[in-house]
Image (cartoon, rainbow, N blue to C red; front, top):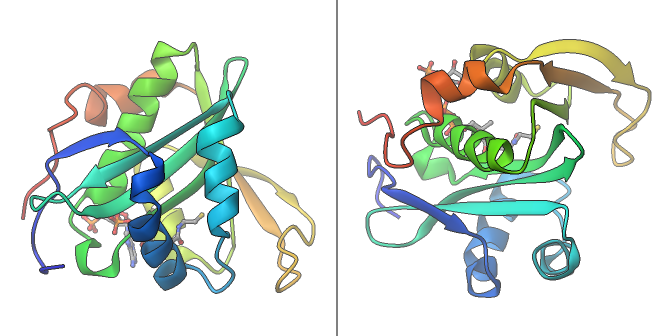
Length: 171
Ligand SMILES: CC(C)(COP(=O)(O)OP(=O)(O)OC[C@H]1O[C@@H](n2cnc3c(N)ncnc32)[C@H](O)[C@@H]1OP(=O)(O)O)[C@@H](O)C(=O)NCCC(=O)NCCS
């Protein structure tokens, strides 16, 4: 994928996206999810909302997922292809997740993040998430704790990033 291109739009993740999603997943995590895990999420999990960001050529440049549990949205996964990082794609994906969550009654968002994952923590902090609690030895591959982060008011994020699905930052 060409460096510097900016994604134009989002769509719900479908089975045809999984080749590209798995490629990004494997580039992004030391212990990637399996293809069947994504398959189950998009086919069987009615609480789940999974989206992909499309680059200008139509290719997938990032994705994000959430479980909707009452008024809480639990972010389960977010990754951006390395060639598209630091271009606002992660921010925009969370804006779109917030927009879709709002439509399903979500009022606050939560997620887990590795203390060592500074990039993700910076992204979440910039959007108003605050760390509140830890899950001990949450990550089975390294035994690392998880930081639990919360965004208490979805509207704060929506005001900045959720109203315009095409409103991606271009650089
Ligand atoms: C975390 C991730 C999704 C961020 O995606 P992104 O598209 O690069 O994020 P954005 O461009 O929207 O960044 C928004 C802000 O987050 C912060 N940020 C993002 N990447 C950062 C980095 N590597 N170092 C420090 N801050 C970073 C910055 O404040 C950035 O704003 P700036 O570029 O104006 O300085 C991406 O790095 C990724 O896919 N990582 C691997 C998967 C992962 O760790 N997912 C999170 C699991 S909890």
